[in-house]
Image (cartoon, rainbow, N blue to C red; front, side, top):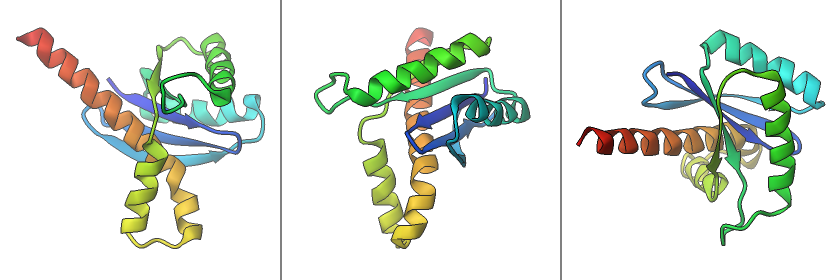
Length: 144
């Protein structure tokens, strides 16, 4: 099953897509946000191109696990998607994903400008890989 992760923000949406077997996540793109309708049309292109069967949306919880201001905006986006798509949409904890992405890009010695270009799509890949790993682990436990 091929999954797509969306790292939804005020200005951008980071996109990552899994391989066809659902084992690995790859960064794909960053959509510069315009409005929900135009953003959706752009997302639909990726859904069609990659044959997406499931969407994972990063849920921006506070470090203590409570819902902050970004959660409400993310839920509005998720509800918008649910009304227009007939595929499952899963919410996944995205805490520390941007920090992990930033650390990776710093380690790669990218300039601040280049880091800014790639951080959202790398964070999306980190979130998606976390989801895929948890899903596989859960499936492995069922097999035992």
